[in-house]
Amino acid sequence: MGMGETDSAGMKVLIVEDERGISQTLEGYLKREGLATEVATTGPEALRLFRAAVPDLVLLDVMLPELDGFHVLEAIRSRSVVPVILLTARGEEDDRLLGLGLGADDYVVKPFSFRELVARVRAVLRRSYVQDAGELPLRVGRLRVDVARGTAAAGVEVLPLTATEFRILAALAAAPGRLFDRGELIERALPEHDLLERSLDSHLKNLRRKLASVGAGDQLVTVRGLGFKLVAGAA
Ligand code: CA
Image 1 (cartoon, protein in one colour):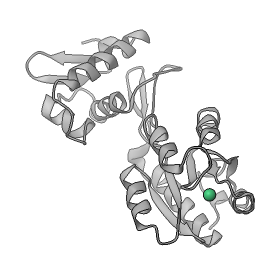
Image 2 (spheres, protein in one colour):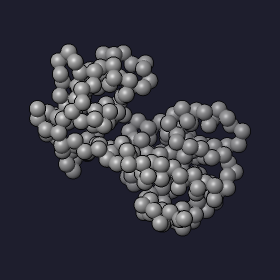
Image 3 (tube, protein in one colour):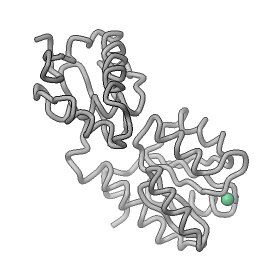
Image 4 (tube, helix red, strand yellow):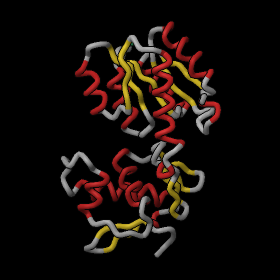
């Protein structure tokens, strides 16, 4: 079954690849699957296009001019959970582990089969957007938290959240009205566990300020001594 027969048709793939022959062939394969494509040939161009084109998936070559794929991946992950598939060189086991550690969803090893890569793209898109109902945007009052795309908005206003603020909001939004104590929030939103507990307060403070700037500040409720919760409207 082709992608055109699923909800993934029309989704956009950002191809980051400096070898013109590879990117052109990839574009042809992905377009036949009903996907839209954008191509960047350097790291900085990838980041510029990522912001401008808001792709649904990124195919990211590791060896790139100016800024390598790992740095591009880090920059993308600082603001988005968009699926990323790395294109790595043969035999570079460390590259694959580093890539997965930085948050890549999958990788293929060059030289790869285009059919195989398209199958991976299809699988990652389906896993990220199509079949998993848990990936549908969460709605709490005026807030809409799209975990799959890493975006949060109040009405039509997008909230400019950091990755940590987003994870805190997403954890709270997954169970509206439920009280989360500090330990639970740290575990869910700060999985690195290497942050001082007090840093949670500054993340919450910043998140509350950003929510307030779009008139949704009263949806984040502090229950003194117990924890925090996200509610649909003012308590
Ligand atoms: Ca390359």
